[in-house]
Each structure stands twice: as C-alpha cells, then as structure tokens.
Image 1 (cartoon, rainbow, N blue to C red):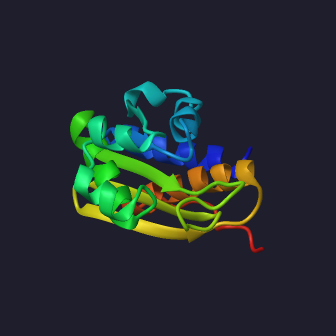
Image 2: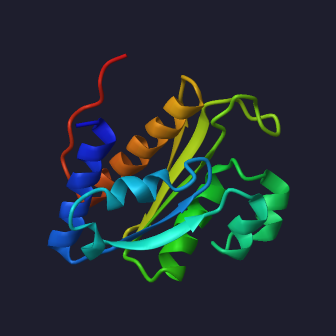
Image 3: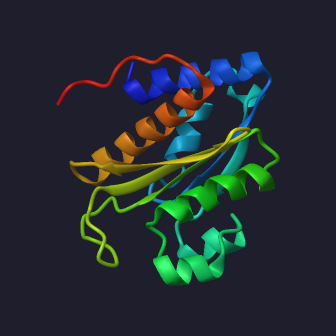
Length: 167
C-alpha cells in the first residue's frame, strides 16, 4: 500500500472514531489530497469536501484568502497556506481544514523554487503550517505533498503513522 494511502486510512479512521470531519483546499495538488482521502472505505463519514484553488483568484473567492495578502505575498506563502486551511474549514463547516500550496514544477514560479511547498492544518487548537523542500519531478512532488499534508493532520490528531523512509 502506498504511504499516502496508509496515512489517509489512519486519518480517516481517527476522524471517524472522534466524530470529526475534514475539508481540503488544494492548489498544487489539484484534488489529489481529496482523492486520496475518498479512496479510503468509509471516508464519507469524515470527509466533507473542498476546493481545488489552482488559480490564484480562486484562493480568495472560494477559500476566503485575503486578496491583499495574495497580492503582497503571492500564492506560495505560509500565511496563504494557513488562510486556505482556515477558509476551507469554515466554508465547509468541518472540524479540520487541510491546505496545500507550492511549486511542483517543472519551472520556478514567481521566484519560488521548484519543491517549495507549504501544507497547513486548521483545527480546534489553532493552525499549523509546515514548510517543505521536496525533490523529484512534478508528480513526485505532488504525491509527497499529499503524504506530508496527511502526516501533519495525523500529528494534530495524535495518530501514529509509519516513520518516513530515510532518503
């Protein structure tokens, strides 16, 4: 079983046991987080839905990210990731909001290097953002982003998942 699938299963089962829900706002992953979650049998008890906010303006109109923040910092920013997670949590009426933003490549974007990614989780105890420096091609960066976003949520839920493979 791929690592992101096992982490997704652990997250879905923990959310279901706790009677909690999650929603996702995805930029560079383009729906891959949501797809990975709904691949888990029984995900409908925990997954509310979400937004694919690939275009910058959709981060504001759908997820509620401040337009001035986007204009000042651009879409690849830790505060934008936090705002995405908080926005999807509120707009989907979920206990947890999960967000991804970054540069998957093949070229840098707005001066940001390929592999620079921010994942965020907003929940009952506040919002946490992780900065990732990922390597590999576009597909590998997207898959790694999903795994790390789900790991962040698992950490916040207190769920133990397999340790990362040593590179």
